[in-house]
Image (cartoon, rainbow over all chains, first blue to last red; front, top):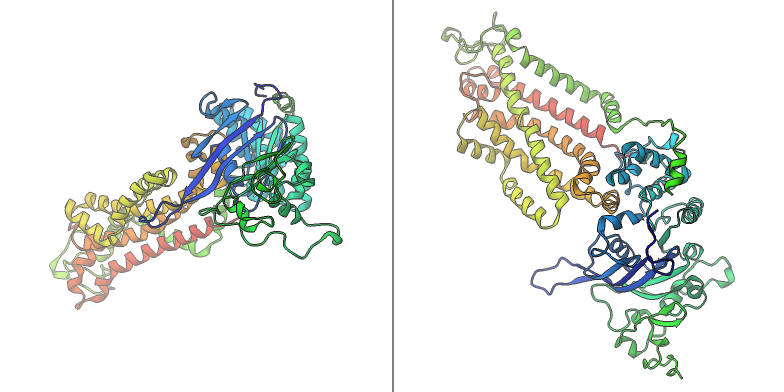
Length: 339
Length: 296
């Protein structure tokens, strides 16, 4: 186990002002246009917690994951891992050992020409573990994720089911004994019954190895089950961050409200016919002025298209970026200036 | 965590091994009847070239003006004689040597060089990729026959120069295929996962890229052997490859073309050999592609 530096109060991961714009290929004469995939987000991940990241397709969830993993270079912003600034106090290779990722597509994330044990043993081998020890570690991990090494270690990915492959991917991510695991839609492609098994496995592994998770998903029920805190993203920005219960019970941002209203309900009486959100998310090349959500927002007022709301504390850790919560913002629902 | 792992390693697992990829390819290939026939034909041709001194009934360079252009079935000359009275059967058997060398040798050389160029370009991406691939495109823009003739003409006639120019013709084609598969594989999650685990470029290319791109490049390259055969014959036909009196099918086709009105069957024989050889290589590479191209 890697050493814990700053004690339990120190956030494991601190992300500050992370920005990633992708250039769009267009005619050379035109102004250089960019997709604002991630447009300035700040958040912290506490030690031992699970942070859920939710939002529509294209809101920058996966880009954020790849930026944290350093698979993409951010345009600006810093990442602190256990208080150490990445690239300064903390070498990239040392960081790589402590942060691992599980991808959504269980098949594409395994090399089809390698056996399961070779795939799992690859990363330890890179970091100087002997072939024997790496294979033994692979077998132990397979055992731990519920796959009999005798039956599975010598097989190829196409001989496994989706759930089995995702267990292999989890084992592979754990092979370097990381402290932070990013799960990017890791269970979204699985059957509901298999998904439940894998979720329970994730919970067990977290306790056993003292892991911290960033759980990216569009399934709000799963996020509520698994996550301690949630970040709601909209068009490359954080709309709301807070404890899971706080957000699910008292969403502070109209977008979070709409997302939660879109969850399937078990009780027919609670179902509704009207879609809670109309239209597609706006083009991230040309995000709306002011609050990015205002063209689709039920509470939108003229002021919303003029000024962009910052993240505001709603109590405790709960923060939301909405002018309707901001005293003195000019929004008619805004609370009067604090006494 | 380290502790748990060390404790669990006490029980040695007996691991069931699945048959590897190449075993599967061989099994599927051996069930492909056409590919197997093509393979046998190729093997016979190679055997014929190796055993030419023992198989050929006559000296391929000894002619006699007294027996020029004898038809098929002439006693002592089963396949007739050419325009200088040399035994056709012997010349066809000896011709297999140079024709196969010219057809086959450029392809593996171009496979190694073209794959290296393409994989580097595909893996590097960005500007490096653009510089390498646009340079390759300059060569690719020429029709292969024209490029081969132009290069051979510049370098001068002769076997070595013909081989060099054929190799240069194939490098861009193979590099383009290699670049496109490498770019595809490079984007896959398992390469990302390998990068995320801190592996260097060399380890990623060796373990994760090569194994997944070499098969398609290899299949494409085998299909070039038949093209190479025909181009080599063309170069010899134009006098840019093998020099007379050496026997080579393309060159024989050239020297016999004057006889096409007198004895067309004899004049067509080298063409038949080129046809059989290139078809056999082509069918075999088709079979190989089918055997490898199983999405399981």
